[in-house]
Length: 147
Image (cartoon, rainbow, N blue to C red; front, side, top):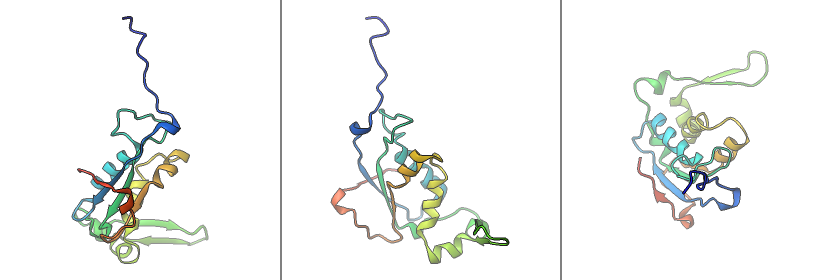
């Protein structure tokens, strides 16, 4: 057999099988959890991974409020926002964010690890983060993701 008879498989948009995974974030370190979740959203765990196609799976993260930071990041790390107005800088710490919107910590960490383009935004829509243990995706029968 000559070496040209094998073609590299390239996934096409309609052919991708998307599974659902569930991750319990309790006592997980935020960054390490996020990098593994980002890889699954991208589809890097599949042999059919294709860079320009969204081959990733859906990921449901529960107990997001119980994810942890190492060291003093809980009080010392800063989230920076700017309203666009002069002097419109708002700086918050994970400690403050956790009280108001605990899901933001995981969502933001994963977002930073995905591509910054249309494809990345499409992948981010497959991430579902919930502060507690309840989630409305039982019908999708999410499988636990081994991290």
